[in-house]
Structures are given as structure tokens and as C-alpha cells.
Amino acid sequence: MNGSNYVSETKVDSENWPKVFQLTAKDEDGNITEQFDHAKLLQQERYAWDNNKFYLAFAPVSEQELKNADFQAQLEYLAMMADVDIDA
Image (tube, rainbow, N blue to C red; front, side, top):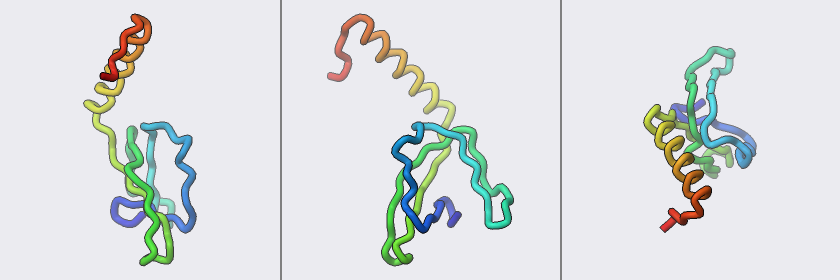
């Protein structure tokens, strides 16, 4: 970890990660430095100035964000069942 970024020598395959996941960050000695029950990946960037290492930025997901996502999923399900387009 570097501040709030995880630094990797290689690109991390995050394509199949869930939108929200549990995250535990540890230092070189295996000590837990940060732990989130609900986190999300903000971005993964490669920086030439740091020998082309990849920096991954994470953020915690708030309870309100979880409630909003659940509400949106329920709304989309109801719209699908009623054959109503809500994307407008």
C-alpha cells in the first residue's frame, strides 16, 4: 500500500470483480493496515514515473450507497416485470 493506493508490479485482472467487495490491506509484515466490509475499486492506473507500476485506488462504500444500489436493482426488476422502459 502507498497511502490509499495498492501498488503492483503487474496489472491486476479486476474485470470479474464484483462492484462491492470486502477489502483487507496488509503491510509487508502481514499486519492489517485497513479493512472494509464494503469497498469498491475506483481506478487502476499505470505510471511511467514509477517504473510502470500499477496503482489501484479503493474507497469504502457507504451504507447509503448500498441502500441506493439495492433500491435501483428492485426498481429495474419491477420495470422489467411490468415491461416498462425506465432508461429514459
